[in-house]
Length: 488
Image 1 (cartoon, rainbow, N blue to C red):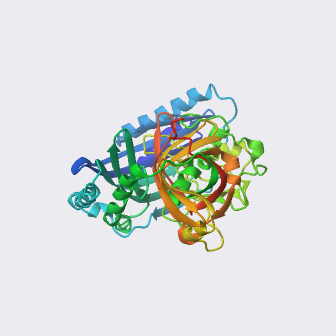
Image 2: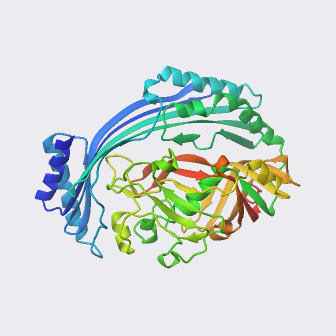
Image 3: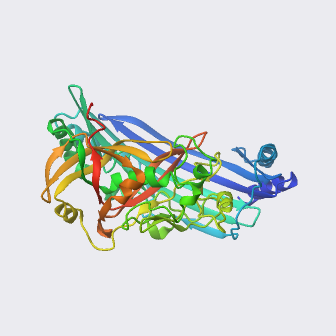
């Protein structure tokens, strides 16, 4: 692969680039799904190509190709330089990069069983057995399952001397049961909504999830929701399970801390951000119990945001985002870090594939667990009156990431420290900083789960990225509930 990189870097330099990088990617994917006892989709694909990003005349340029001949690579690099020179003509300020030492690294994510050594027949057999178990419960009208694997191997070189080779193995699986009755649709998902659980692991993740063992319970809960009372409206204490809290972090912390949004360089899909620069180290984001990090290191776990180096050659780091409730950090790149006076990027530049330019993305943005042991059951016992909400169903948040509303699949009434009636259509809403400041308890490390979100969209053309969100169940006081599905 070295010769391909040298073709790209040499061609870029000869045409006037002051900085150049080349990413060669070999990307293999397997995606399987079933629907009501039939194969919904089955694909096994592979693509390989090079993306070249350069600075020339003070502007960025990017081009990509799957033509890996010398002529193809050199044409690609030349095109990137032309784009950089054109973009430089409309630049508003000088482009500078904070320093990053060159790295010579080979790294692979950890896994026990290469998922591509398992057969498609074996994978589909498990999904179809889960599908059948879900539909064996009377009242289930639709069952959907999915299983996905990815091997993402990348070689990165830049003109500063970095030579980085890294491979990530990713697995994901889950399912959903639906029940249609009258004019009402109810849904339950396992182990999480929107595709289940995803991590940088091998096939062992699928085995750990116990998909088949949980199918009947999930289906029965789905049907029972029809006869459950509606979530009341008002204000009360809310306990969120770790998967819902993970999405709450994604939307109300992860997106607003992206520095390209803060600086007005990006506004597609998720808008900009309320976290303007004067709020850094000054804004009381949450209560003293709220500690959030953006951690891409292996020590944080096998999240979808775990790697050795980001896609502009910056080493994975743990960046404090909220420290005892105080807002302390952004997600940055080498050029955005320079704009706010930082001496190093936090390492958050990621590209969906070889044919997409890297942009600022979440890594593993996680809330740290409580320092003392506290189980979910103990947290419920400590709550006189409230609602436990589980598994996301819907969400809405404004283009500054400040006012939000979330719906969950299922709720449980809490009275005098005990779970009571099942509640259907639970929802809650609030203002980001008021909500995080209302958190008065969070469970300990024994309840902490690093969830994978495989489908975070950003940019134009859109790039889909996997992010990680670790969380333990937590309690929030005086939260507005019940308006999303009230019909009023």
